[in-house]
Amino acid sequence: MSKIQILSNTNFQLEKVIKNELIEADTVRIAVAFLKKTGLDLVKKQLDFALSQKTNIEFIVGLDFKTTDYKALNELEKIKQKNETFKYYCFGDKADNYNSLIFHPKIYLFNSKNKYISVVGSSNFTGGGLSTNFEVNTVFQETNKSYQYFSQLEAIYKEIKFQDSIFIPNNDYLDRYSLTRKEIEEFGKKALESNTIKDEIRILQKQSLDLEGTIPSLKKIIIEFMKSNLSNKFNIKDIYVYCEKYIIKHNLQYKFQSKDFRATIRGELNKHELESKHKDNMQLFKRVNKGFYSLSANGLIYEKR
Image 1 (cartoon, one colour):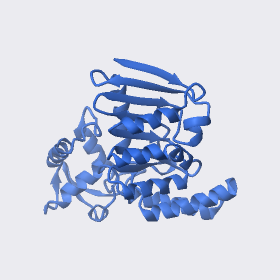
Image 2: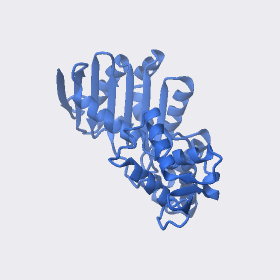
Image 3: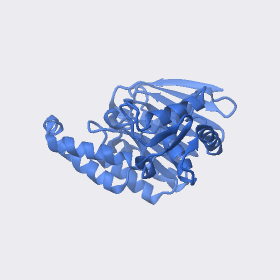
Image 4: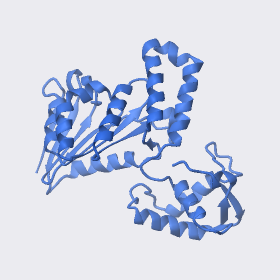
């Protein structure tokens, strides 16, 4: 059985749905483009209760310098430090992620043993988005016998979570982000046009690339294989076999969805090969001869995701 409701905040606030489901759910996953502390403050009591019950809660939030609130990010970090069942991840804005995507979803997933609640619509996790803005959201209520809408949204959530652009901020990143965001809030467009702020944003973008993600990228998997062997050159057939076994062992088939995964591996090797003309070439591999590769100097010291 399933029940579908369309809410606008004027007829029923999304805040009320979230408060109720935080109390009842065993697992909560939220992916939103923008996060503000005003949104967290609205549901603080219910969030604290859920975490006291060891509910697994996860946030994925978009990071840019227009809307995402540094106060909210700092609050997420505080919650994470106090609760082992809480996690959060960041998705860089178009200018600083791996695939030039604009991150703009609003997905809310709540599930328990017999109930699956999913929400998709226009509301970000902000005070306005959850309560006072004129928003439009669809709420799907399903049982454990049939939860097709939940399953579809869960698949999209997983696609987001396992993008190479996802990273986990550390305290140094959060401190730098906070200082930069404060400057932008105080001086607005003028700050964004200043060379100092532009330099700080570039530093943050570069720093995010060195932070831990949710899973290793395909190039990282290939590099780890090469580093684990003493050989000076690797047959591409052996690279295929290792990568295929790796994604099965770590349950990553949904991340590396491809009708021809081996072609994807070849593409990654060729993209980052020393002589490649690709604009994103990191010069990680050397083509030794036909069908054989080795690590370049860059590949030997590569530690990013």
